[in-house]
Image (cartoon, rainbow, N blue to C red; front, side):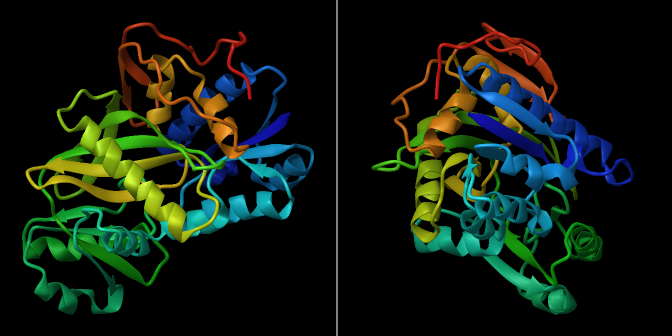
Amino acid sequence: MRIAVLEHFTALPERRRDPGLEAEGRAMRDAVVADLRRLPGVEVAIVERRRAFREMVRRADAALVIAPEQGGALERLCHAVEEEGRILLGPSAAAVRLAADKGRTARLLAAAGIKTPRTESIPFAAARARLRGWPPPFVLKPRDGCGARGISLVLRRSDIDRALARARRATDRPDLLVQEYLPGEDASVSIIAGAGPGRPLLALGLGRQIVARGGRLVYLGGKVPWPHPRAREAARAAQDAVGALDRAAAGVRGYLGVDLILGPQGVSVIEVNPRLTTSYVGLRRVIRENLAGLIARAALGRALPSRLTVDGWCRFRADGTVSETIGEERWPTTSAGTSAASI
């Protein structure tokens, strides 16, 4: 099987690249490519230039896309794979479209009875007037954002103009989201969603998200797995969220990341990311199974294991570099060996 892998930021022209996002994207791309190359019978082609994507997909059997939801980038790339009739190793364009709209996702979660913060979509043009009904603290965020970009915690009304400007710079949409602020600890659960009978949802474990919470929220990295007392509850909430997305949109499969808050109110789901997340670079180092192989199996409708074997924990930075690993380091990114796991 030949698999084309595109990472959005590393495939952009040099003049359009953001050094921070490029480093994070490269770390995810190199990690998943190294794991794919360990699979017997798999050949990987890295798409170095965005303009070459379609042609490389045509010459492949399948494609894995790593891209932000912002501005519809991920949806368009997934749609291109579908148009070429190739296997998409990730959620469908329709599933991406739904999950990328954080406002629609919030309504979907609430309708499914999943605990999530109160959320309202408001036009930028009417934002100041509409926000009078929201006493601080509250969160302002782009409706299609990712990576905590453009998100602000409004602690006082004097913060509103600055927060609106920050959100405006991060999106092309005419509206944004105002969201109830929930105190607690930032967390995430990575899920591999199967495409076969029963649609299994395999939780890879709870991860801690390290987020600087000033007026501007800044993602600094994370730690996986995180032995939190609410780890099982968080995994169930994440599986419920992905299950709700699956019932609303066809083609929920492969790797997804679910962001949560663990607080006095319990576990609350914030959003669902229909793509590979930075947690992958840490998870692959402590989980014995080949995660890229599991992603491929899920997309092909093949069986997933009921549980995983975890050795130790890993801490990583926002740019995808690993700062500390305790336990056996399973898969250095630069290794070129083979794995017993197969598609």
